[in-house]
Image (cartoon, rainbow, N blue to C red; front, side):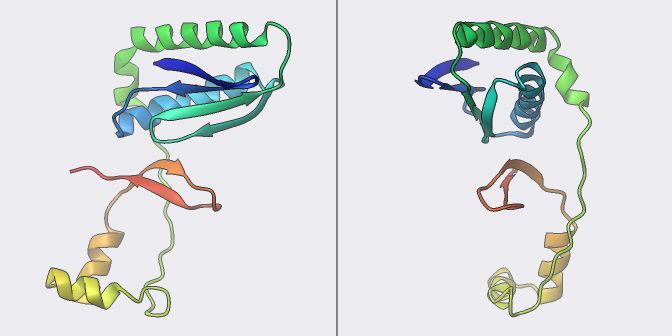
Length: 147
């Protein structure tokens, strides 16, 4: 973990460079920890695949207090490394609409892959996707591609 100041009231917490499900779970736990610990001081917290940007209300001695709390939290996480392997994930079922008006590339994908359109739909809709980050548009998810 690396913490870097960005402005007089913002900093970045980096959890490595690897985009993977375990990093996503750690970031999720960090966000929950930080929001509960500094709910009145936090203006915004923005997670991504491997980093979290925190913007906070500028108050005397708040930055060192937050950094100390984050370092304690991280040390606790390190002592419980196996904790993440059994972490409970939330599964969401999303409705998907494959009509040609909203999926104009479906026939092209099917042709390139040598499949029928129905086979492409079945392959796409029967997979479980890990969400690594949520985008700027409500509900726009960035997935973790594995294997």
